[in-house]
Length: 284
Image (cartoon, rainbow, N blue to C red):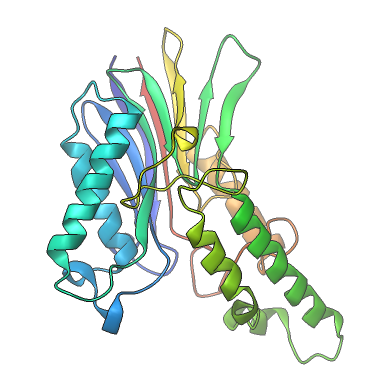
């Protein structure tokens, strides 16, 4: 099976792409999006190899995928990447507390003709045996959704006061609900790789349960697969359509409290509510 990237985009929410934590990998064997995540900083503000922790985790994932045997399963890939991240953190940090970092993964394996998802990422593919495109965005994690809804409640209450003390623009620039949802975000971080209805997968050095490894085997024949990270509210079958969905959300719900409750607002000086990456892959 051959792979080719039809179109792709990697964007940082707050600056140049090299400052973001979402990365794209293209090799003869895999096309992958890696979304770095960080739930805290190292002691004393130390950063692994001088990189923001989420970016560091993503670069480790990128290097680990390059070394992956073409025939590897998603279970083998996840175990390999977990070991690589653990080793990289050990070498990069001399003392101090290990940062809570990890990354989500969406990929197409050429040798196995499979679509892979681990963590909050999206994938969409056409399947002739079913009606229309299948798959979707797996970013709506129950624990993160709960935190976003709690934040929405606080923000909507502030706006409902009607005193004019808080305007939409002010709440976009400085969000007072962050202190309220901080314990919920701590709880969300603790649920990574736990089993049960609120657990979710994340490549962070801990064992990832089989239930959090999502594998779809593509039927024979030419196919297209769209991959997206959680900086998009939905994954569509083209980059333009996926961007339109995002821009419509940012225009109509910039506080991210109605259509798409999220843990922070879209800031006017940013390009999105989170880093984002997209790739449309043709599979032969």
